[in-house]
Image (cartoon, rainbow, N blue to C red; front, side, top):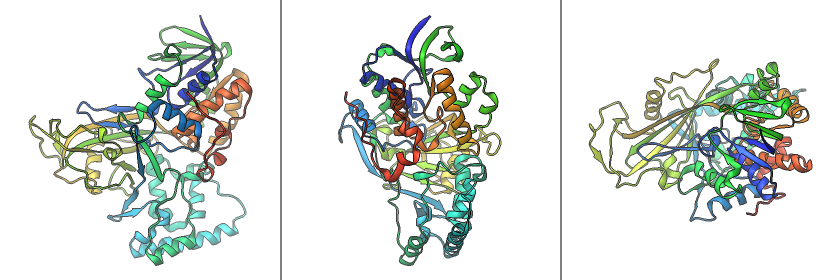
Length: 495
């Protein structure tokens, strides 16, 4: 039986963050394994046969950590030769118009009756919240306390249902932090009176993106350049079972690896099932994500718009990204000849006749849950294309030259009402009883620290905790980690 001191399961940002730290600290006995052919995890990128790249959702690079920035620069390179830097330009499409994001700060863009409803709700919420004696018990109550009934009904409730595929009343609200902008009543009223737009909120107001290969290329380069010898990484290795009491991982091919410490990025509910905590695992919920991409002949009419939000029911997606904006090489060059598969309105294509570009692309995200928001996989592409026409992202006669669809069974770990109690019990139990550090987007089940930078640093800090007992700041203190967009400078990566 093979033996290692530290075994890492998963080569996404968390697992690779751990591997980079193990290599940096000179640890000799460790191994990383992953079920896929290459590194990336949920941060991978697919390429269509026609040459269009699509990420697994709206991934962009912004960071709370020096270590993360330095790691990516060491892997990809520094500066404009390797990265595009973009200013976020985001809008909400509703009432047949664009409303600047965040919605709650820009209700001046709405029809007058909606403005009145939103302002009345904000004032009522401010009074109600001042008189409240207990904190809100769920996300829906938080929305009502902070924003009031107008914004709740017009935007927050329908939009968040489309994102999470679960009613906000079934979600807790400790995860919010910098994820959701609150509403300053005085500022909202002033913006309405002055007809002013305010759009600079949030940690990703400026972000960067690799010049080629999509987000997935970043993590493949991290694996290749920053994690030491490639014999420390093994791919196409699917885990069959974790024998926690014996400290053994059994692979589907029968191979067994004995470890002293295990860092797993596998979903927490599955790990709990493996150690006999089945009832605890059932308290966790998640949503699936359908990523739909279309490649279009022509030039994008959307100027510098990055991604947009959609609360209404005239389209199935909650977010659309102009993915071709992020990097020229996300689409084929204009000299590439491609046939038209179909027109957006369903009209016939070019019968195989290929024509040159230029090309641009859109990427859509559609949430799914079996209980609250099922999706018909046979019709979702057509529904998405029709939705793109309805929301004026494309024209009926636009020529579609590439169509992409990938369903991610696990898209978002839901901050459900019982999540905190499960995580508070499960993570220390696994560590103390079985020497298992369950970390990452689904491993720790903390959406609020589930971005690429957070996930990577969960892996880094878990390694430090294994070796020296150092506290895992990102995992334990999400609010402080995200506070004010401040940069954590405690840890450094030097290749």
